[in-house]
Length: 403
Ligand code: NIG
Ligand code: FE
Image 1 (cartoon, rainbow, N blue to C red):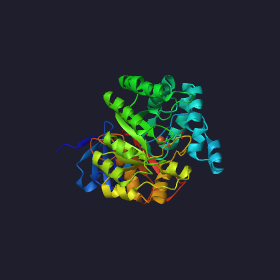
Image 2 (spheres, helix red, strand yellow):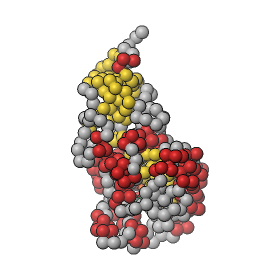
Image 3 (cartoon, rainbow, N blue to C red):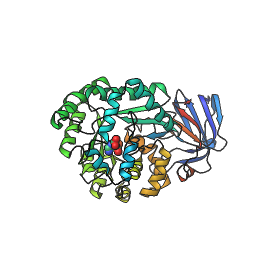
Image 4 (cartoon, protein in one colour):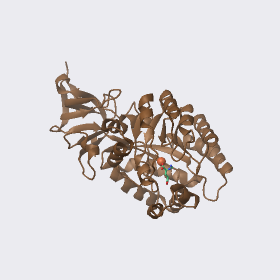
């Protein structure tokens, strides 16, 4: 039989393929062949076909996982809100600060004032921090413009970042993040649903549409209208749901077939079951939980019991989660939410891929998928979340290219 031709052959690897339904899919003494930017073969050395490769990398026993997928970020913004950290320490809540004109509105002011070059360069710094931790796909939401021009600029900058670095970007339109400062709620929702969503779909500027369903943002009826507008335009939907109160947001997202519902601190068992039924992924965001000093935890046990998929993400943003580290968020998911190391590792790979509707392309080490890989200088994968501040990433490959 003719040898399999490959651009790159990785040998001596311990693979965490994430290919199974629930475990890490570990293959000791694994090999992985890359051809045309895709995985041509992955598995045990003893079962591998003859492979004729142009280039080789001996991992000398290192672990190889799928490149990390950060499926919930607000990476493109200007300014910072470190002053609000001090205000919260002094006793004000996140919602108090939002109602006083700070919070999302403060970042909206800074983002509107920044030109494209400033927005891109501030965002690139944050992106580089994520890439240094093995990220190969990142979702980026708009939502800090809240007017037509700035929302479109945010989405264009998000797309532009993918041309500046070796990374895949999923862009999400989050016009329904807040009512713009000084704006009228009804006419703003008209703008979001009747003008922005159709335009963004036609111009291919976003892959999905998100909402913030919360007392300080939009109610269930308003979010349902946004979901319907997104579906009419052929876009999938996501939701920031049940973060600060139980608004039945998880159930609403599931009813509308959302890719994911995110935060979920106040979600109940019915919401968890509805999500499992609909295939809506629970995206857990322990960075925001930590920084807002929340006490109510998302119902991990109910998600497990219902069989709801669980992903983890940084929620990187200037207010509630100024954390550019998936690994730290993984540590927090374990310590604060009681997730297992394996749940977190799947949560930053295959489950996060599901949360973006991209599990057919990324998230596991399987033939046909993008050759997005992270090679780690660790003896056990637990080290990735059991330690903070170390840099165990040895190599990162995006679509087969070492970057
Ligand atoms: O995911 N919850 C709403 N939106 C963001 C935070 C936005 C902000 O505070 O700037 C979040 O936590
Ligand atoms: Fe968010």
